[in-house]
Image (tube, rainbow, N blue to C red; front, side):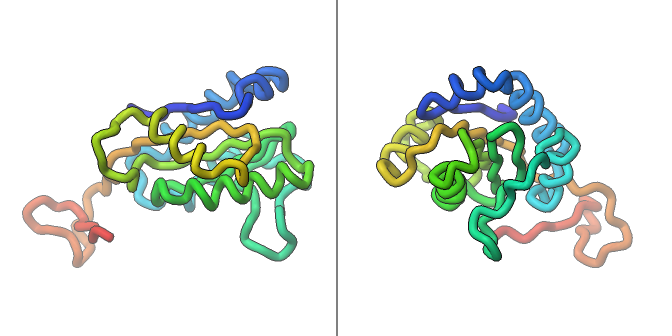
Length: 177
């Protein structure tokens, strides 16, 4: 699996009316291709979104002087993301909801990693997302498209000159969090 898109609250209809469905799919593919195998994904995401034209307009800060700021904005649609852990779903949706309530955006896109999804019997992502989205109602009510990415483990190439490299595998050893 590379990524999956899930639509909630008529986001697909809104994105279709804005003629953005294909563009969003291309953006999600570019995000995956550019960030697969990269260790510091969040640091590169802004550049990738800029390459795809997601830095249009003056709607950036949701709350002046605060961190809550869109990663991308285009044609009334904002993107928020974190590839650190799935638990960012609540914070990301809250940032998008604030912009929606202020009339800054018509819909949102939230990009997340599958890393950190609660372990359990359920493996169907649509069931997990529906359960999580239902738990956040009525607080979160915006039309939103959630993109879930499975990047796998980061790949770090030859690192002969680094002291933390294993001499056996010649690969950098990344500590687990």
